[in-house]
Amino acid sequence: MEKIAQIIDHFDTQGTVAQIAPVGNGWINDTYRITTEGSTPDYILQRINHHVFQDVELLQRNIDRITSHIRKKLTDSGCTDVDRRVLRVIPTKTGKLFYFDGENYWRMMLFIAGSVTHETISAPLAYLTGKAFGEFQSMLSDIGENTLGETIPDFHNMEARLETFRETIAKNPANRLEKAQWMVDELLARAEKMCTAQRLYREGKLPKRVTHCDTKVNNILFDEEDRPLCVIDLDTTMPGFVLSDFGDFIRTSANTGAEDDPDLDRIDVDMDIFRSFAKGYIESTAAFLSPIERQLLPYGALLLTYMQTVRFLTDYLDGDHYYKIKHPEHNWQRSEAQFRLLQRLEAKEQEMNDYIASL
Image (tube, rainbow, N blue to C red; front, top):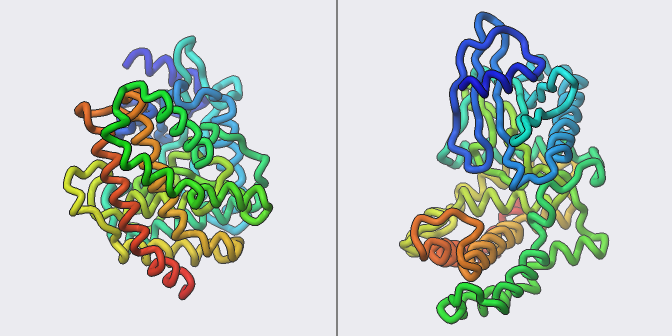
């Protein structure tokens, strides 16, 4: 930990370091909790994966703008625990938002004391999570589309994902197309519908807003009484469509099976989770959500599930270069599981539409 201690010394922290301990199980960034002596605050230190986030300066500038905007909103509203309600970026002693040690990029944030995260979901928790992500978007709804840059270009751009998919099909580099042809045909048959958001955006009918792009329950910090405190993991927060954030939560949390479930019969849509999240989300976004955005929320669940199926299948056809795999057919297993979820969502699309309309 000697090297970590040297990294810490470059940041504008208070107190004396008492302990350095790795935390979390994220596969993108390495994270450490820095405990200090006495009553001075603790900190979170992260090594930024600059292979995934290649423009670190843009990444950190985005996060600083997001957190500063929310901090002002909270302060202006009379909030008394601002440092528990939004992340605080700790600059280096020279005022930069990150430190480069010659090989790696590092950043530091204030540790939010008394906070907890959840790895499993329930209907009551889905409602609170929907409210929290909705409030996050609501506070950022006036920040302006051009204030932030894309930390991962075309991350949720379905047209770009399909272009890569078609190129991979044409090349068939891993010679796996014959096995996957039936699914390729199914996905391409849905391609026009799944590019609806991009088309509506070009027509000026669907706005881009600030979106989180990773709306899992474990990206919300809760207090000891399970009240939402703060949205975390802001690396992919950038301009996008609100239906992506709504859809990704449903894809990951309302699935009754696993993302890579080998037993396709376990996969279905938990409508209690859907309804709870939708209720919380719509309650907290009512002030800014347009009628077309609201109408397209269930479509967002189909879109993000379709997109993930395309991404898994693209990687399978390409020879498994992007996602970590546990066995040679893992990406095919993931593709089948996500495609089954897409089919179950399609079967419930009208029910989801009717519920959104009823709120």
